[in-house]
Length: 407
Image: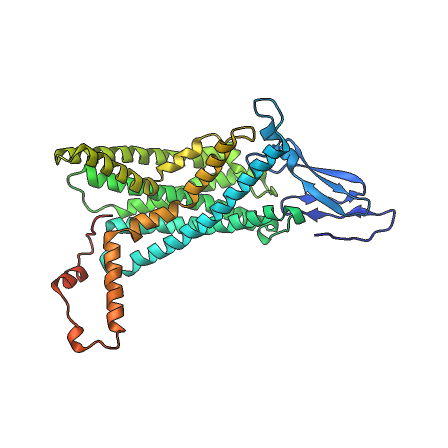
């Protein structure tokens, strides 16, 4: 968008301008202004400078963030990346972010619907689904904030060609920081409830006798323990960055993020990996005791692994793999960015599908509900159609403390 400002010949200059990421000071005409690269992407080198030229007419030219990508260019081998390589890397990042936003919306809608199903039907209430509901709630809280910040950042980046349109979140630093803090809190809570899922399932399979689970302890681990870690991180970030205009974007590169968030989160994932290994060990042992063929053993073990991976979040450990640079293989750049963002954004969708929509008991309840609704609204129904079978009675009065198998 072109903006024209009138000044006298002696006062002609480009006015103060906010590009959605940084605020540019008033600059004399025919001068190139420089600001240090913001720490909003891991690929940006904050020791370099963003450029924007003030024309002779007192109009800002296009902002140039390309120098910030020199951090990628400086990687071995020590040959500069071509413009095509840099553009390719940027296009991959942009495409992966677009896919991520779609996945976040899909996961959000799926989890809301799944939580609604688990909450509405009395026959589905049991210890296992109670834990599922808290995991879904943590997911939904996290995805709500992820979608807000993701759409805000996507809108900011895609407006680069027209001067980076300013958004309400971008210009309201307290709101932006608050959303960032709550995003990290809900993410850590999500991993905490994944840990509880793994611990509960491991206890069910490994113990001959398993009493009523201690939900007070589950609530503390799932919702409370994360709070002091996030508060400590937020306080450290506040005194380190203060009123940083970048809203703490790129904070994953700080030592505080690793100490208070990344290490605890990966510790929970590591514990879940151990739970998964033990669960598979118990499953294979029981299959061998039942004289199941080797082929069926392998098939069931693979199926169990596929079903448990999204629930326990073990796949998130792939984030520890170093990010590729512009000079790396184009295929690896595509696989890394699309693959990791796909696993993260669509994980909630897979959890909802595998543990709600594909659940045999859930499907049975929904079929009965639909059949009842269709019978009730049938204009040709007579009194002789109101017949209840013994099976229907048994399913209706099913004990709340017991649920059928997951699949």
